Length: 139
Image (cartoon, rainbow, N blue to C red):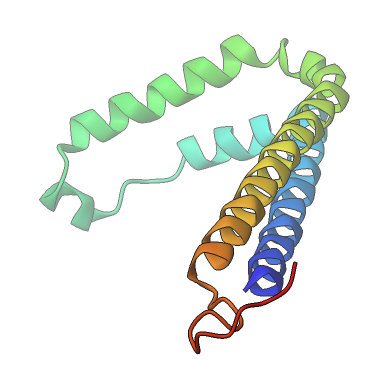
């Protein structure tokens, strides 16, 4: 039972590490993309797209046009700040791995507590040798 417990925790730890690695990679990539200005240009291009006629079934076309204008205004307002995001990339990656480390300590603590609980539970439910048959066991 303890082996199954630790095997499950190894699976959780490997999954946790994979999620942290993907998150750190995406944080680094996102910071570089925002700093390069490509995201601003893509956002401006998307804000210029014509609104399809079927959107009017769910949203007021005037509201959609106002949202596009707000996106354009936001991109223009933040365009000069985006190169500074590149400096935040390494900090974001460090924060992700710091959270990974804190999570691994938590998972290890859960593993140890579960192991101790399983040891106590199996000691309580295990049959005692000789006592069931009336034979005394020397100590």
